[in-house]
Length: 347
Ligand SMILES: Nc1ncnc2c1ncn2[C@@H]1O[C@H](COP(=O)(O)OP(=O)(O)OP(=O)(O)O)[C@@H](O)[C@H]1O
Ligand SMILES: [Mg+2]
Image (cartoon, rainbow, N blue to C red; front, side, top):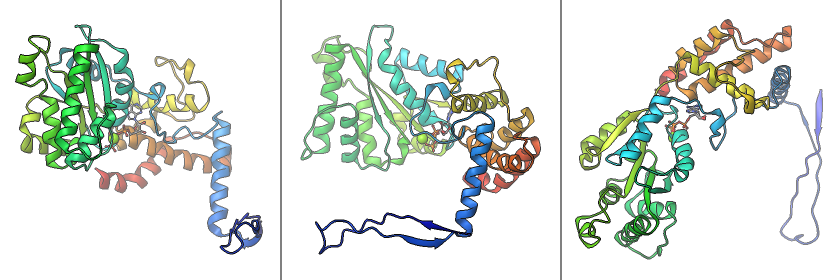
């Protein structure tokens, strides 16, 4: 069997520019790869259709959707407490894929709608890039907080503009600043000293000149990183680490792993808005299958998603053979074993 690819190869040749476009038709044999690719896609589509989904429940999304978020109430409580009491900065600590960025992005969105006990609101900014030098960091912070500066400025001038604006927002708008910085220890050391300056605001001078109007920290840092990065920060930047509370992102337990799978299925079915976390369906997954997946993933949401996607592949193949879409314990065992080496390497 071979296919004719009606490829519209649009070739504007240099000389013929303006003369129009050449259209070519090329014929190629369907390669084994293409055949497998298409068969796979068909099998997946049939499986998804069978369970009433419009797309794969385990696809990745660029931006987190709070309806897919599995809440860990104690963990969220501790973050809220720390932000409200305004005594310490926060370090969201967890392995790769544990949900640090997801949480930060959701908090970034929610914080501006809240008010602390003194009636302060929050101006928020998010620095998602890492590996920055000091000037890049200063510019990234100013951009994140929507503070104007000139490209020609020195790092210190940018940081001065940022701190002046944070003070102004506090005094005039009753807004504390919450600055989210991802993978914080992955930046150049010099960049840290700028962060630290902001972390310590207001300065003694500012406190004096504003006589009592600046009597609490005005910038809260909400940083993220792995345990290794936290340890590096303790060693190299004790000035920040000493004033920072590390909070570990909890792993998902089996019940939450089931909710994770169920929410994603409901989302792909277009039923997420009626999802009930106290009573939900995990079909076509079985309890045992999810427990196996969660054990292999050690409760890490990114790995649960990857394993669930692997299970979807195998279940789809089985479905095309025997008409049963179930993700059995056997399928989960097969998939978790196949991924075991990969998971070990990553962690
Ligand atoms: N609590 C949660 N509920 C539902 N899904 C989650 C949760 N936490 C994380 N996820 C999902 O897990 C995946 C990884 O999350 P995220 O990117 O936030 O992890 P991370 O800790 O920032 O990883 P990295 O170290 O790679 O930056 C994403 O697909 C995200 O949607
Ligand atoms: Mg992240």
